[in-house]
Length: 114
Image (cartoon, helix red, strand yellow):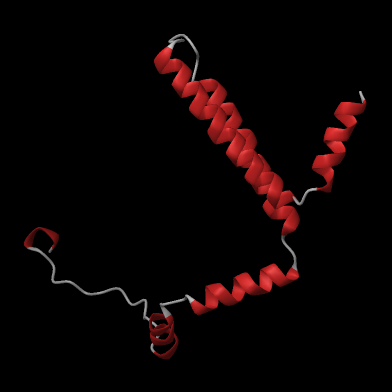
């Protein structure tokens, strides 16, 4: 029991991003071992469901870590980055200066419509 508590205490001292990288390395290693086992000595080892379930767990872990580590400084930095990389300013300026009119175009009537 003390070993399990020591392991839990060890992981609680780590930063969440470090745990995310460890989880990613563990996922890739186990996925590689499963694929290797499938193609070498155990053709009946299932691949799809274990990898899919683990992928969902890893994705949830990633999203959780990203959402818990976001703060105001990160949000300001991200907003500045998006503003710096906005390449469509001229299009927005054109719409502001000369807005589009929503008048329906008049097309010549065809003979069948007369």
